[in-house]
Length: 287
Image (tube, rainbow, N blue to C red; front, side, top):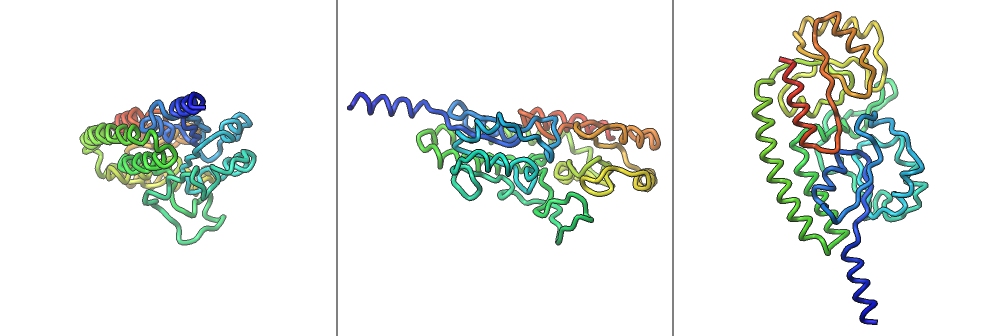
């Protein structure tokens, strides 16, 4: 009996916490904090439209066995996560349970509407959900993750806390680098396809003059684009921020009419440091 008990304890100590996350950037943070004590499955790809991820049966295998599900929240996953949650039949990762973590609950969401109607386009009632693009939000979210991992896996809590300390130190150093790189971008006026980079622009005091979409989620139309082009010329817009998942033809057409360059930027990735290194470098072309 003692041998069996010892074998059980040894096997448990080497068991990994199974974590499912909705987006790559969340997976990156979990791996940074969890290290070898976690096994992470990411649902979406970094090049996909985060609003319209296709739910696949392969994800269900991971969700059925997961100890923890971490979501971006603010209704960003509403188009694909509910059926996966229901079909997973895993009571531990349902909203409100200890194995469910909504990161949007721990940041200040911007652009929260006073009311919502279909006439406003695809507006999120909680506010803009793309908060991962403000690097100042990341330390808070890392701390939240470490706390949750400790809650579910007390045996490895010391390791999680140590990894958190190392990550926060690294992130502080990188944040100072990004601040230096972005110091010359204050007041720079831009337009974007979708209201995707608003947190990043606010963080570095850049100005969003307009979007190619007339309303969130509504495709561009000729009348709106004509008005936007006039506004861009009048305001002295320096660049068009284009994401990786919308068609670039509209942005390129607007560029041809204004002489304003199109800057293609990622919004997600499996390495947040590389993500912000890339974005801060690319937006220098907006000067």
